[in-house]
Image 1: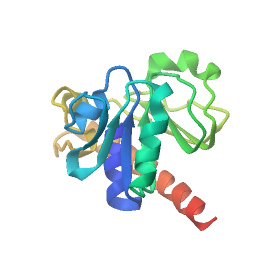
Image 2 (image 1 turned 180 degrees about the vertical axis):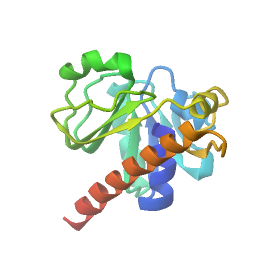
Image 3 (image 1 turned 90 degrees about the horizontal axis):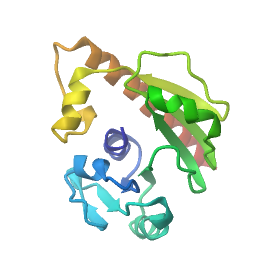
Length: 184
């Protein structure tokens, strides 16, 4: 999810970078970056910072600020409290929903994404938008092959078409929020 988001943001909205603050840096690997801590050039020359802990976000955020990036997509461990952000995209899978009432994003705008799920009636009181990305075997295989899901393609996979449709709906919502903030 984070990898697809940063690729879309860079292509359609503003130059963006990915910060992988998860102890197991899967997002960095999907961006073709080794798990070594530091700032690297990832897929499509997108900057990727591997920090492995939310407590070490500051140097990566400063590096991205020096690069004059317009946005940072941060892959956090599940249900970690976010740093103060303009936009937080909280991604959870169905089992993670039980912890949702405890989650608090310290952000001006929070978007909830229910990933790889059938449930569509989920809400989070602090979210300005909620998107459900349905289960897609193509997306599952993309993760196994270390390919960002948005780059996966299968014309014979209707569930992947649904996933892409909802993903681009999410990206349109994020684009509107970013443009609204830039005008301020």
